[in-house]
Amino acid sequence: MTVTIKYFGAVEEVTGIVEESLAIDESQSLEDIKQQLLSKYAGMNELSFQLAVNQTLTESTTLKDGDEVAVLPPFAGG
Image 1 (cartoon, rainbow, N blue to C red):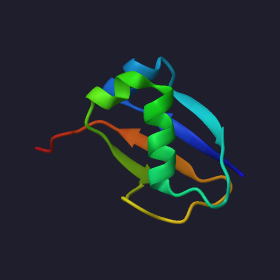
Image 2 (cartoon, helix red, strand yellow):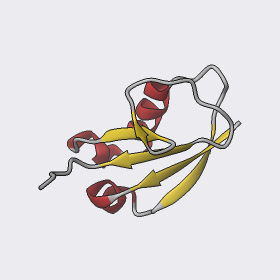
Image 3 (spheres, rainbow, N blue to C red):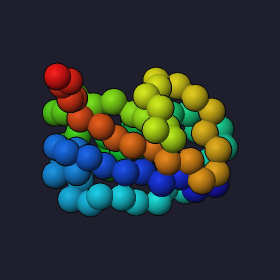
Image 4 (cartoon, one colour):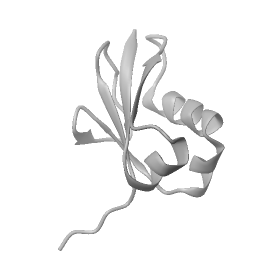
């Protein structure tokens, strides 16, 4: 199955891209994907970030084909 990974802010600067498609196995967890991205983009290890799946912040969820995973840097509200 395929998910879309979108990068924002400082994470986008490290990856050098805004968006990519990632083919994953149905058994892969969100944590597995996070580790895969950390391996692929070494500079992400220096950043703090959160993951959102289909525009909902989460630490774990079952991913489905076509899901969107956003990699978000810390942000402050006002």
